[in-house]
Amino acid sequence: MKNKKISISTIAKECNVGVGTVSRYCNNGYVSDQKKELIKKVVEKYNFSPNFAAHSIKRKIQEVYFLIPDLTKSNTFVIKKILKYLQLEFSETMVFVIQTTYNQETYLKYLKKVVARKPAALVLFAISDDLKIRDYLKKITIPFISYGKDWGKFYFINNDQEMMISLLETMNNQNEFDHQKQILYIGEKPETNKSTGYDRFYSLNNWFKNKNIKFDYLFFEHNSETSIYNLIKELNLNNKIIICGTHTCHKILLKYIVNQKFKNITLTDIYQKNSLLLPIFEKQYCIAIDYQNLVQRINESINKILNNKPIDEQNEKYLNYEIKVLDR
Image (cartoon, rainbow, N blue to C red):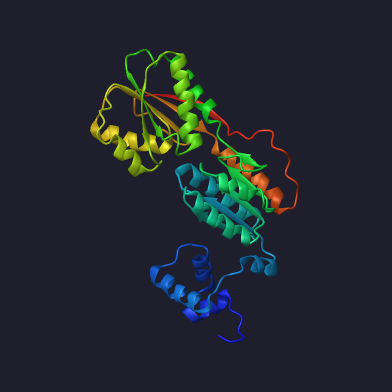
């Protein structure tokens, strides 16, 4: 098309769809397969690449991007709460949630694309394998907040070792480890994820060694329902204390235990504080993480960034939590 400036509106008009549909397509949002194929052909025809940064400057709209490897229950809770806050407090701000993967190359590819659009702020949900990501983040000037790893000046993390030790101490004070039940830890492979994998198992392993208490352990490759179920689907879980490394692990185990009608079980969980939790077994122990407090702290940081105010040095980077004991 000679001497004609190609824009999202141009693409939308030729495809006979709305501008919002083309925008969602460009941001990997939901678009029906039929429309996606139609838009793809026109985009390729003009070799079109949207300049969201210029678009935002023209309309004086700020953009905030979230990069997240997996929409777990806790991650989804945090994202939804922050989105609601931004809609109320910054109605003119465009917010994009980009789901990546745990693969570093894929994560970095999306991160570079987002940074090229010059957003007002980034909220990054961290992955374990991150050396190249860390190096790249040192070079950018866009303010960002990371959750899960200390990728920059402003970050929030779980104190996984402390949480696990607090859980074990609470259970020990309740005489759970009196050798009447076999102890089994089921968690993420330590090499796969430093916090939910390595840190939680490392602290648990050292604690049991210091107490001279024997325990068994099993690792799943990824914190996914399929990976966990394939690991446990033939286990006999009668008469066991089962310590779960993640909430997803607890969810799959709970369903399996109920379906198989196993008896005399103590089960642990890691979940969102204030969530409704019904005691199914004689006794349950939970690490209750205050994700609402995390949301509040991230919101405060984003607020300062969008209002061009300096963010104070963080005095507290760890998430709040408590150990709950539920009796049936």
